[in-house]
Length: 343
Image (cartoon, rainbow, N blue to C red; front, top):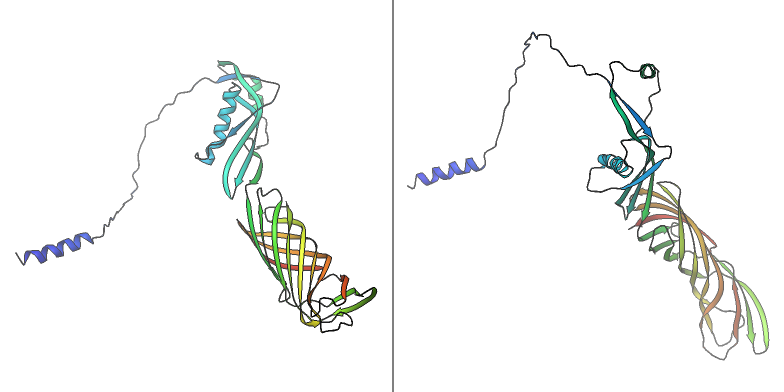
């Protein structure tokens, strides 16, 4: 019994790990056959008269997406014949509208337009009429009758986007946006960090009691500029690859000074540590689609400051005031490139 068990285990092992192999060998040889003459059946020609309506009719077929796409036009033709109670369609034109929602095919509509025609008389003849024979001898150009007239792709649904853009070490930014309808307005929130702010020309009034002294200077000890913008934009599609976007909104800008700045003849060592500005932003962007949901963008935006303020470090709250601060435009035009993701 102990000898039989190992043998059974080996047999089971080989049977469970066996490979099924099938070898087929074909041999072909010349086998001449002699067939007797066969006889076919010839049927008299059948001629049908068509009654064609003078007014074009149309019908729209809403496709069942579970059906094979190559059968949709046949179903649309069947709907036309059934709806207008005809036997044939003269000069049919097919128009297909495809709707894609969130990158998914959601609807296909096929519209057929043509002249309904019905058979008014069907009869059998011994020979074809002369007109039929003459027409068949005419060399007519071969043209496509069953064709798709137009393809319109309509994109619907919500849209969420993210952009990351840069201008080397001098500008790094990001943006998020949302739209209830991709063809409507998009609402965005954008933030940028400017590594090397430009020098800023500044004009202000130094007020000490009833004495107002105007001052002007160039502030060069700038450290970092941060911009925050909210607004809307609208897209215009030019092709399957290119879109142009125009945007506008509100802008907030903050600049820190590397060292405290003294505006005018300040006593008691009161200093100013930075500036803040509120204004508007406008710009445009060119979007080139690489893949579905991923694009390369080139954008240009301008910030127009309207209200300017100074961040103060006061030693004496009763000291003279600084008012009517006016800055030159900080980085009015800002070109940059980046990448965009659409969800």
